[in-house]
Amino acid sequence: KEAGRANGFGGGCPGGRSMVVNSEMCCFCFDVLYCHLYGYQPPRSPRFTNDPYPLFVTWKIGRDKRLRGCIGTFSAMNLHSGLREYTLTSALKDSRFPPMTREELPRLFCSVSLLTNFEDVGDYLEWEVGVHGIRIEFINEKGSKRTATYLPEVAKEQGWDHIQTIDSLLRKGGYKAPISSDFRKTIKLTRYNTRFCFNCTIST
Image (tube, rainbow, N blue to C red):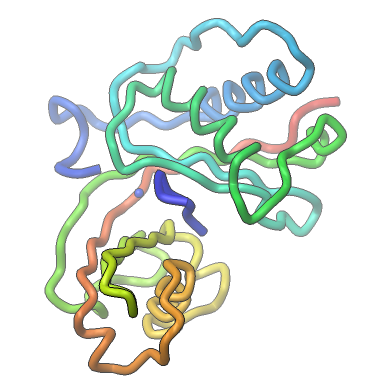
């Protein structure tokens, strides 16, 4: 869901600073979810930067690391509040999955993606699999504008080429009609990069 679901910020880092992503962010997400599921007070503010970034929080589960939830926002949010919000949104409100439970905590993996280097491109094929995330905007059969996005790792993990990725995104965005080459050319595509951290499963 966009602010959105995804399956990474326009114009670079705030003030031109380099982007710092570290495992503390993933640990913080685990703390937020753990406290919520057990009814504890939310964890105190973390020590990492509170600069504003667009962000996504992704949850996977089990040895095969199946997707369990992924939601984020393309609007820059202060990291402390943004990660609190999207930790719970991705864990509990991703419409593709039931809300997470306490029993799942030991099998969960968390990753945080901060988004950077947004570029509007003129050709829907003008991006690199495994390097760029993509966000598409299109007009559906009813004349409504729709959007959908995949983070950079999705196409690579699925073994998709450019066309397969675009077509999957169109379906994800709710487009149900046959997909033609001419229709693909009407898509507005934005590519972006992410800074990514991944944390192992929570300690039991």
